[in-house]
Structures are given as structure tokens and as C-alpha cells.
Image (cartoon, rainbow, N blue to C red; front, side, top):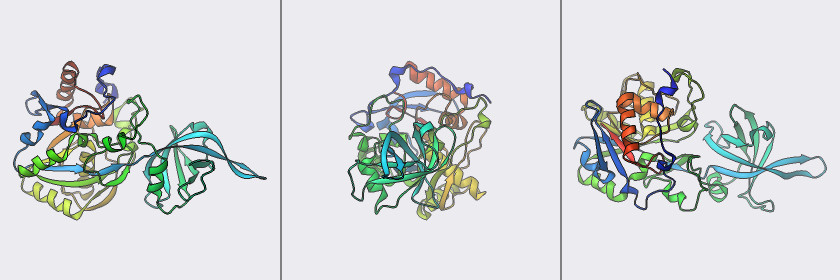
Length: 361
């Protein structure tokens, strides 16, 4: 299967650069898998499109300011360490065996080798929030593993120095407003470098509408990292490998999900990250049921995959030739999905993270 089979034409002006003032003001394209029928709707219609016995699953991960700007530390035998050239580090995954170790992307990669010291914070900042790290290992395409010197509250320090890692197709610097807007209203557990964007449309009012209709909901966590957004650099779909992403499902959520599956009810996933967490957990159990626990999802879903848990999907529009688009095509069929994307382009839907969404059932 060729990666080029998942290409489509998208005018640049349809890539949303700013969020709407009203989260729930986005458009929604409804795609029926069995018939291929396409309907143009508004996101506020979403609660009414659900069946009374549907179970809706959210990913409650929280985006943290994972983009750090700092300097290399040059070593001088006489003067000790001192700050040198400017660098950029994007933290992508916290290593589970050592909370001070992170996998990351660095720039400029050629100047950041194993053993390089990294400094984040003002040069004259001697307080406890200053961050220092050392490069432990290097990988391909700017990937590194680094270890930070322990600090009392790592995420508090990152909140001070870091920037919200807006995707590269948003051609502007992050702003203070993005800290709230590039975040779901139900975000809880920090660890993601990108928002689970299908959830960005929900407001407290929409969530209340789900409760009023008696729609049951549950939450899982998958911290979005390289496994979600790393570009596909091979020609054949099957040759691509996904990075691992930390995920967890509580006993309470597992119980709710499995009772729905046992009763033959639809499980509606909000976002492709939710799909991957649920399907990874079910595959790991070998029972087509979702166990409670933690893991590191590396499941790669593309056409031909048999879904064990998910029966409906709310998702944003994804990049051409991306693993996210492949997952959506696996769920609804390549031809219907690409036809829906063509329709969305013709109807001037807004694409990607701050764009519109589609509901596939």
C-alpha cells in the first residue's frame, strides 16, 4: 500500500491559523460509513446525532509548554560551564523509568551531540526554576534523549520557560491565549505536546447537553507525542513505525467501556488518539475488551485493520499522507473518506488543529 494513495489537494488558505471565538462554532461534516452519504452540519448538532445508548470516550491529556528555547553550555576548564549558542528543544515523551529523562527533538541538530549541556532560563537566573540538562543519546531526524537536573517541580519550571508547541502549519508564534485555547476544557493530566484536537470543539454547555440527553461518557489518557504527528518518511504504508506514547485507562473507565461492549452499545471515540488508546488496550488484552492499566501505545492503524472497540469517531481533518488520515481511512474506507475530504475542500471547511471536524458513524 502506497503512502501516496492517501494524498489530497488542500489550498493553503483552508488551513486554520486561528481558533474560532466560540469553540462550538465550528462546522461538522457527517459521514455515514455504510452509505457514504455526506451531510453538512454544525458542531452544536453533535449531541443530537448520538444514539441514547452511545458511550462517548474523551482523551483528557493536557498540553504542556513543551517547546523550550535555551543555550548550549560550553565547558571551559578554567571558568567552568558558560552559556553558548541558542538552541530549541521540543520535549516529546517522558521516559517512564526516569522522570528526569525525556525524548525530544532538537534544533540545530548537528550542533547538539551526546554529552552537550543545555541551559534554559535567563543567564543570570540562579533560582531553583532554572533548568539544566545533558544529552544522553541521539537518534535520527533530530531526535535526542536528555536528562534534566532534578528540580522541586519540573512542570512548574516548564510552565515558566516553555512555549505552547503549535503545529508547524500554524505560521505564527504561540501567544498567551493559546495556553487555554489549544487545550480541551476537560484537560487534566499534563504530558502532551499537541492537543487531541477533536476535543477542542467541546464547551461546558455541549458537555451539559450530553448529560441532559443521558449520554454516558468516560475518559482515558494518551499523551500525544511523536507517534501521533511524526511524518511518514517511507513510500510504503506498511514500512512505517510509530513511536510509543504513554497511555492509561482507569478501572472505572475500563468498567464503563466493557459494560457497553458487552451490551452491544456503540463506543464513540473523540479523536484518533482515543481510538489508538482503546484499540491498543484491547489488542494487548487479547480479549476484545479493555483492561485497566498503563502502557505505551505503538499501535499503527491503517486500512485492513479490524476494530475491536470503536464504533463511531469524531475527528478533525488531517494532513495528507499522515498516519492519522490512514487511521480514519481504516475506519471508514479510503474512498469514502477521501470523497468526504474533497467535499470539505469544495465547501471551504477549515482544516487541521484549529479547524472544523467530522463525525463518522
